Image (cartoon, rainbow, N blue to C red; front, side, top):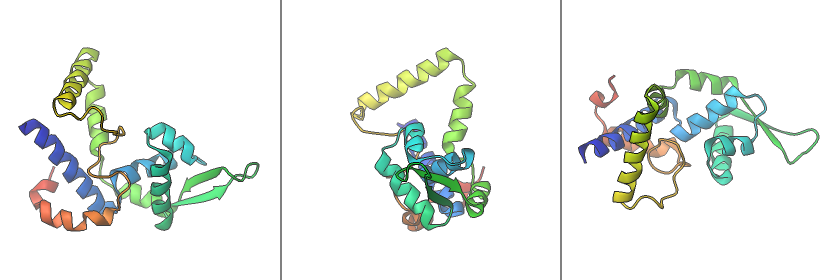
Length: 169
């Protein structure tokens, strides 16, 4: 149980740190990274890559647009298609953001042997069954709370639930 609590706490702290430093949630950060990596990407493409519902992606995109981190332009051939691009401000925010817990996990996990990866996945699936969490709809994104929440919702939580020791390497 201690290990599960540590994973939950690390996820919470990473989300709070990201919100504090960049005013982004992990989901917003991931979407912004995808837009930065592929010029003229579409919401449908982002939805496919992240395995998130289109409505969640649309909400995240609107929040990024509101902060002028991305731009949206309609297609020339098909006006229904929206193309997204990152702005200079969006690049600055990405560059100043801390590493995501998801990236750290992926790097460590991918360095394991196949049999070790299989054992971990199997164990985590079993833990999910133990706590009746198998039927919970969850995207493959390590985030704390709802995926389409505002980083400003974290402001009080940062002071309330963390100490300066939580943010040290």
